[in-house]
Length: 339
Image (cartoon, rainbow, N blue to C red):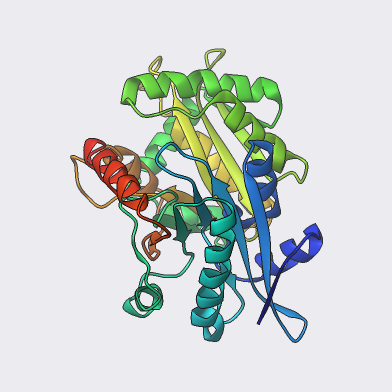
């Protein structure tokens, strides 16, 4: 199997979109986003007899806890038969690449369904579970939106149906766009949400770069909910392949009892259907643990109906002794965050 970089956007996108499951974290746009935020990337193609059998987006992450090579929700493999071989080839390639990039470790967040067989692929190659709960979601909530709107609404939790209708009755309206004006509104509410729930915010430049990277292909929209002349909640949705992804959400404490977020996501689902998308991915959820900081958000997502999808836990391959420091720092961070 030959590995070489893919530099043609159409060739990359054609392969990624045709092979399930979908993840915008392996899109050409996500690679561009990381380049635009100062990261070094490689788009690797795994070829056999001239045909692409797998691809892997590799990002060099320069963190205070140690530089590492990261594969987000990948690699994307054409056939189950190639999984083990691709991971083995990828490991060898990244060990060589990591030496030249002074990487402390390799981290792969695989887009493989959680199973003992898939875990063993990594175990047999010397990988270990990453100490962090996740860098990207490993347990997600998926809604089949190939059904008609009436059926989707009927299969929701009764409370969600009622709150969507109540928001409409109360006069909440939803506006969608991708301009910087929309972004500024979202970010103001994002900062308010951060202050209320005490988590680390994304920078304005980070989210702006994401919007700009996907906007040129019309693959991202901000859904703002307006009530009595003011935006009180907002959501950023990425459309990629056959899925729409609820990537960021924010809500104001003002008019907190107005269920605007429910209507915003319902309109996002309707927009996804208009685009011919078959699944709505609510992104990360947690187990039913009321003490977990994401418990309330997870209940909100699950109420729209759907099913849980579990992926193999993030895998690390240490490259030198400095990894021990990284492991300890991330383990402490995990405990402090209540994960």
